Length: 390
Image 1 (tube, helix red, strand yellow):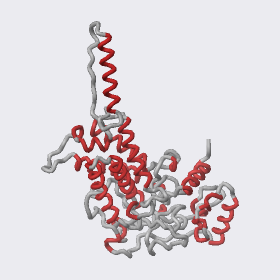
Image 2 (cartoon, rainbow, N blue to C red):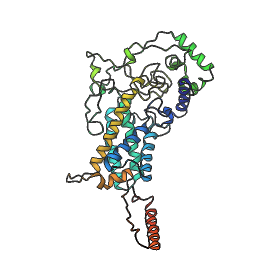
Image 3 (tube, rainbow, N blue to C red):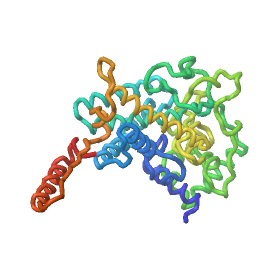
């Protein structure tokens, strides 16, 4: 069985080839759940839960699985390098871009509804998946968890302002993170990086330009190899955000900056938080507040991944409920039962139930065979349509 070190090395190579910036998009990037819960897992779990709640369906039909797959694909693609939304801060709640990120969640609901009305089911599900990605990132990229919140935001994706004011709304220049200091010198850090380059196992780390001179200390701080002592940050529990009540930031929302430039600390404003991890070119060592996985190599606040993922799952279920309320409410305010709500059924790929009752008593073998054949033909004719039996 491969060691954790080998697993992390393999996962790091996978992520370097296809950079990701949030809860990892698919099971592949998370080592099939070993280091956390990815976007597609939360999306699938919420879909399954709401299928049971809305329609009483525990085993999704083929058309429901296809609908679920389109939502999962939409959720994953937002992190794919080359997608227009991969490095857009409002798609990930990065850079304290809370207002525009929240607006995106609200607008995506309208996109889903409009696409359903136009019978463009693929677009509706893709838009929903993309929205869920952004929603889930709120909990892994912001300090909601660090502020001690154990329940989801009720306003997120519905209205503005949120329950907690973003720091940028109070003062765009207010400091939100402390700088790290380390117990080793720059010379030691550079020597450590040189050792890493000589190790064939670690050579892939420097495929990415983050291996430039300014990023050398990240190996010393983050790579889980017994040859290298862990770095230390000068804040309790590696928390960047001041938690004492005397600090104004202790009751404000912030999120990390994800750096794309080669020069260290060239993207984020002074005093602001980093996203963190080996793929954030703006962060050094243990800096950052991201909680996308449960391993310290990828995320500085790895120890809070489970809390963030659990809240993100609850928020995903609530987003489904918000859409349900929109789709199943008439202009006069009357509400449909989910089982009678055609737009919601379309979104989930639910077809109408179909039951055949055939009297097998008596000596009507030839007639019964003909009826059975006709029944099969009716079912086959409805396959790959909205009327496919659920």
